[in-house]
Length: 379
Length: 85
Image 1 (tube, rainbow over the protein chains, first blue to last red):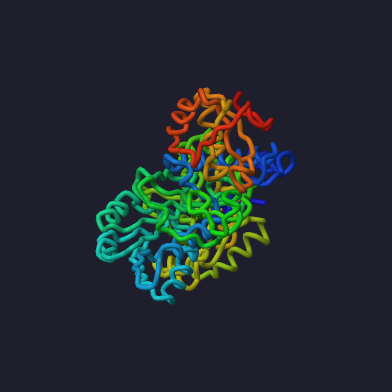
Image 2 (cartoon, chains in turn green, cyan; image 1 turned 90 degrees about the vertical axis):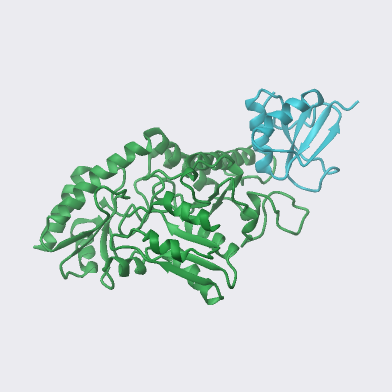
């Protein structure tokens, strides 16, 4: 199998991640922060280690300002539903994933004023239009990297615009974390992340990190329940991180996420980015050389998350993906990738694209074989 | 004569963070279940010698941690898991 769907979830995982998950399940087992036995304290230690690793990764000075959720979708929902009420204005973009557009649609139905600021045909936010749209907005929510084109937004400029307007900036780094450097030094107030893509953890992990200056009391908790703290109180704790976490933590998953971040740190993001550009660049150039092919990506001098989205003349993207899977055992994704608005923006609606997303373990031989397969289909 | 302190925090995350911060600074302490007469919470707290009070509080302050309550008690504390001494 040639696995080129790392934008959905990264695979394979580093051995250290597999071992960390396995070790937790085999040798720790207990529920974090529940009880005083050695195993429960070891479990809590893993969660705390992961919290500190995430905080350090995003440049967050206080690890208590990191919360864990099932995935980035849950994290974004907590932020949006916990902050936005009827009459509040929210600004987003036309390049968003359904993890953003669907909760925003629900909030709009409840009376929120939701504005989608335009992007160009390569997916970059139009900053002049955004500067006008942001006026009066309580919150801006944008993805850092597009899951369709791999386009990376200018977070520093967007943050400055948000700050000058007094708007909270929630940044979705599902596609960029672990590939493109992103920290609070670039200006966002909230970073929502997933653990199972570029951070190399396993599914079922994600969360949010908050900047020092952001008042987390501005977010109402969506779920209340057991935290292992203040058990005598029927009211959910009002302090971080318990305030935005309820129920048993995903200990095995967080052990894997911790190992994933440690793996990334051991290589370095600069090296990972170079490696990804080498692999994805070769793939993109090879596809572009096929008659009738169009690759949808940012210009070469712009940051890119190594996603190769393409169409082949009038060919149905489902047919291409079916051929690649059936005849060559190549895993890819076709259609809208849960981001129909992005396809309207780049001009690929309603057909969508075929998306090939290499990972850090993808080899040049796999790229050659994939290019040969696409060429065979196009002939 | 009371010679130890129970340092009581908001949550287990705070307790373990404080215990690690103290350990990093070489301050002896141990995590123990919160005695039921002090709290009906089912979590843990940290037992510290009275003589180490200032060093402990100084160590955890570096991580922006402050105990919710500090209670005196006698002896070396319950025989629970010892992380630091």
